[in-house]
Amino acid sequence: DTAVSQTPKYLVTQMGNDKSIKCEQNLGHDTMYWYKQDSKKFLKIMFSYNNKELIINETVPNRFSPKSPDKAHLNLHINSLELGDSAVYFCASSQDGERPLHFGNGTRLTVT
Amino acid sequence: EDQVTQSPEALRLQEGESSSLNCSYTVSGLRGLFWYRQDPGKGPEFLFTLYSAGEEKEKERLKATLTKKESFLHITAPKPEDSATYLCAVQANGSEKLVFGKGTKLTVNP
Image 1: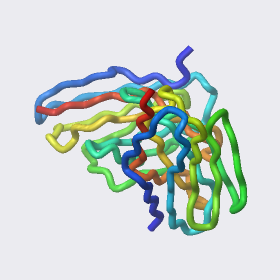
Image 2 (image 1 turned 180 degrees about the horizontal axis):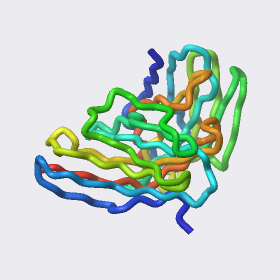
Image 3 (image 1 turned 45 degrees about the horizontal axis):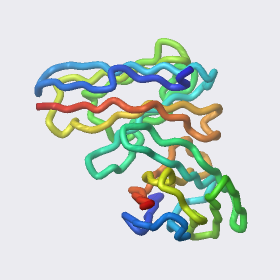
Image 4 (image 1 turned 135 degrees about the vertical axis):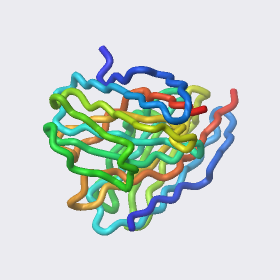
């Protein structure tokens, strides 16, 4: 059973389009995150949600909007995609925000 | 600002050749230091959490240690299956986010 699952695994789209990435965790954790890993493999936090409430919102363009319908799901919607948005996006979860993060296998977004 | 620097960026070892990876950090009050392993095309996989200077943890051929300024991941008699990128991250007191280093890409040749 996959603990943190993301879909799709690959996403290729053109500039200006709007796309969504879905994430689900079956660990019963109450905190979920989105991290971005750029071409230099640098992993940086974007957002975190605790029980559907936004806790962390790093300096991310407002074209990125997370949505948490329940504490097991955290989706990422991106409007007006730009070339610089190309990266691997990882969803993660943890219990209480203090325990180790469990990561999904990532969504590789390519904007052409 | 919290910061993590890992060295070397890449390391090639022969099977059985022990070595260490370094993680230097600056943080405004350390809640925890984390080591993760990342294989190509996969998400980071948790290895260890260290909370205070002097703490050590072991798992198979890996041993992580912590001082007030840095952490080391010692790899004893590595095998080719230990090849991966090893990521270090810190979490500050009162924060829920992890700040990651850029990782060390380890290649173990048979």
